[in-house]
Length: 69
Image (cartoon, rainbow, N blue to C red; front, side, top):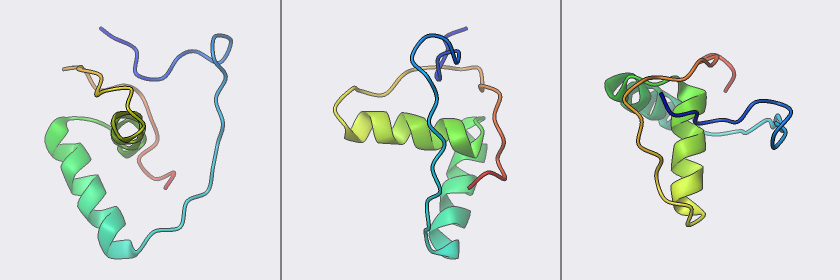
């Protein structure tokens, strides 16, 4: 299993509040569900890819709180 989000002691975790339209949130949640991921993991992977770090491949969903966003 590959870790999508490092443990707190390695890189640190920053919690942010992000305001998005409800329709976009619903679309992202649906896509995350189709990929077998939490919404948080899906967003982190998408942001990493957009930042040029490339998408991290994982077939196992990481633990996360889908209701955080």
